Image (tube, rainbow, N blue to C red; front, side, top):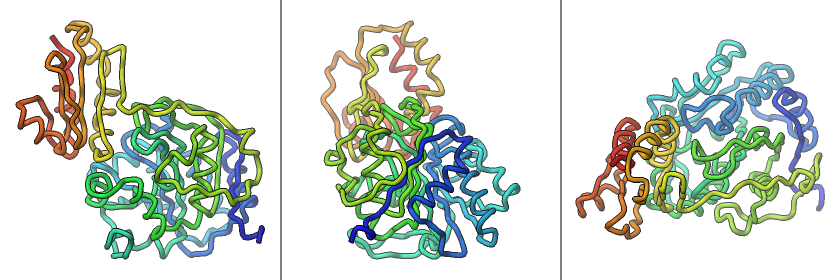
Length: 375
């Protein structure tokens, strides 16, 4: 019976050691690809630099590609990802450092918002998934990060990236987000899962609101539930408190010991408070990554101008930004801004400032933030 328990491999090292560590991980968990085509799904959630700690590092992906080219040269390799702004995916691949793989290794980069899809039955009826998700050797390469809505984003959460734009929004706005992420693993089952925990993200992730953290870990398993249990534990979280990860204990850890790798991450906030700017950001489970990423990116890209307005304005007045479909009562002596289509109808009803869009345009959000922080 023990030999049937899923294996989770853990190795320590940096990106320069990634190629050798990939080989070691595959030996630890007895992994060999079985299909003629390989589909790699990284986490590239926007226009972020390779060393940001926000995206799956291209150095790790390159090590993976080189391994397959050396030992399985006949296999076709596809790397696919989607974006909250599908038209920007080509640019995103370039900024992330993935574009060069096309010519260097004859790898195909695919915008998942443009691929053919087929219907699958699941808990909530019908779901449309990329055709090659089952015909290819599916390798799910997540980033070790915290998340303000799901506590962590690891391999289970990374699978949400294979969905089309409409279904991603549905997960947040019409379904129970945690249950939907969990249930997705019953119809989308990776052949291999890897977590890039060399450079990770803690605090108010999963994007620019978090802080980069170097953990120097790579984790791999054929079992998506087991790997997320191990990674979340290493990050210092109680898996019982993470709604989308089913608690499992019957797995074998190979390589490093979990507790030798234990490295608690700063926990995400809800709501998010920024005391130095007298700001509170309110959100609920219904807000999707379209609005949260837009807000985080706007803030990160325009921090200097926002701080300048804050310094010049009335610093004593509390500022609030609201996203999603739940609306806390804001005292009349505080300032407020509503972001996204989910929130703007409420703002219109009470004649309050808002930025519409799903997601809103960064330029519009920036303009309204300057007003929020100004005099």
